[in-house]
Length: 275
Ligand code: ATR
Image (cartoon, rainbow, N blue to C red; front, side, top):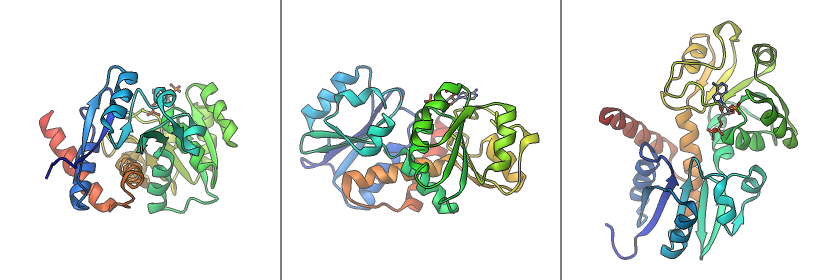
């Protein structure tokens, strides 16, 4: 029941209307008997939104596009990884101090670990945008990572994390696909379109393939690599594990990821019905 003690959490970004996070976090609050609600806020003016968060003592937030980097200057402190990555997807209000975290990297790592060993493995990461950067930071600490990106400069910038960065091309793909144990697509290619970053003729068997795109749930990349005999992991697992880390930072509760996935799948189904 919502009463005078109910705490408020939310998501800020633009657009936010298709987000699965409200469904997931509200279901978790109910499951764990936490007196809180989670809402999606479409924000036009970030600075005034952050003032509002302070003014209304909102307890915690997720941050999504286009504010993950812009929000840094308005916060009071950053976790080590948010500082290194320069991007925040979770804010915790600790007695009036807004502290920024980034759970994208750890979310990806935990999702991967659910299906495969990661330590010491050779990881080919496609994409050096916001998500690619967070994933590089986290995985570079325990695996061998090569990043390929359409814009070479952004791949090279990630070399500061001790990885190799190169331009994404047919040649580089071919070379590193023979090298890799795990391939992660952190480009937006394949999102709501039947396109894949890996041409069929370059596919290799025995790869673990993780696509962080979750719409559609089975992207062209996952469909083709699954048919080729690869172990495939969909992007909903990344969304769930990064959300689980946010929830833990806010409440101290380590949530049930199976339950979160069930809620997210239901929400995806009803979202499709409503479009
Ligand atoms: P996110 O926060 O989801 O990572 P982003 O920061 O906009 O989003 O990054 C998008 C990533 O997808 C980038 O690596 C981008 O490559 P560029 O750095 O060259 O822009 C990549 N990307 C998007 N469309 C692509 C395409 N058609 N082919 C290859 N890479 C693409």
